[in-house]
Each structure stands twice: as structure tokens, then as C-alpha cells.
View 1 (cartoon, one colour):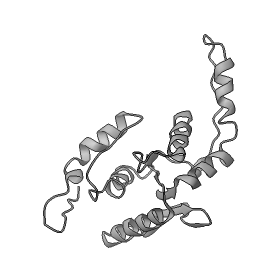
View 2 (view 1 turned 180 degrees about the vertical axis):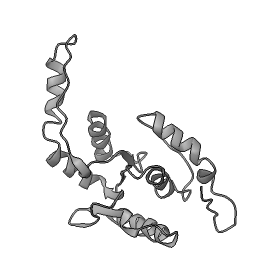
View 3 (view 1 turned 90 degrees about the horizontal axis):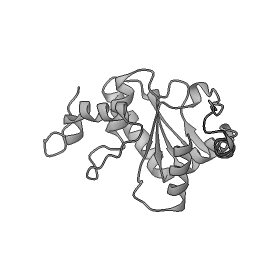
View 4 (view 1 turned 90 degrees about the vertical axis):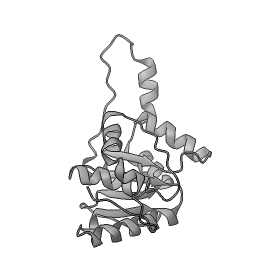
Amino acid sequence: PQTAHNAAGSTNPLETRRTEILNWINTHDICFIEAATGMGKSTRIPQFVIDESHSNVVWQLQPRRLAAKRLAQYVADARLRRGNCSREVGYRVRGDHYCDEETRLVYMTTGYFLHFVLHHLRGLFRRIDDLNTANADSDFEPPVQDLGHRWCTHLFMDEVHEASEETELMLLVIRLL
């Protein structure tokens, strides 16, 4: 693994714990990662995941449009300097996007994600009623739609500590998925 250094020359703590972070992500459905601002939670950790396997697709949710676009540009530029394809990284925000079938790391706003879920996962909320009315002893399985390349293997939600109605709704939707 490549080691990153900050301006002072010291090694980034997330880089030194790359294997440990990937093990946690691969063995747990939900992980919370706390680190100081600027350590690379939004930039390095998603790259760890897409670098681990070419089949991994990461959606990195951001509460603000500007953050989603700027982070995507920053990561794409950094990967291009290291010899990777800049099309691996893109963004999706209301009314604008830069990504295609080769994009494996997509920065998107939480609003765009909610819009996507509501329009592409028909029956998501009906699933709650189905689960409540199903016999607890039956082998009931809610239907799962095949979304092909449009879906992700890993979903990261940034700024979870910001208490808002949108954050609460996001956490509920993610729980239902």
C-alpha cells in the first residue's frame, strides 16, 4: 500500500491502519469511523475499498453539493497523478453529474440518494408493511430488484453527527435496505 504524508511529513494515521479499516468494513454491516478533520475519511477510505477489488462500487454521501463535487474532483486528480483512470471517480448532484459505467467511486448528495431510492426501489416502504404482516414462522423474503451497475457494494455517509431531519431519514432508509 502507498503511504501518504501530510505537509509536515508525518504518515497519515488512516494509511497506517488501512488493513484494519478494510477488515472492519468487510466483516461488519455498519461501521463508524471517527478521525480528526483532514485525515481522509471522505477521500482515502473510499479509495481503500475500490482499490481492494475492481468489483467494488462506493457511493460516498455528502450533505452538500459543493462538497460532493469538490471531493470528487480532488480524488479524481489525485488518482490520475498516481496513474489511475480519472473516470473511476465521479459525482451526482441534483441537476448535474459526472460519471459513467466505469465510475466506481461516486460522491453524491444525500438528497440525490434519497431521490434515487424513492424512484428506483419501488416497494421499499411497502416492505415494512409486508414484514409486519408476514407470519413470523414463515420463510417470507421481501422481493429484491436487480439494479445492475446502478447500485453500490459500499455506502458511506459523511457528516452523520450533523443532526437533521434529512440525516434521520437517510439512516432509516439505509436500515431498510
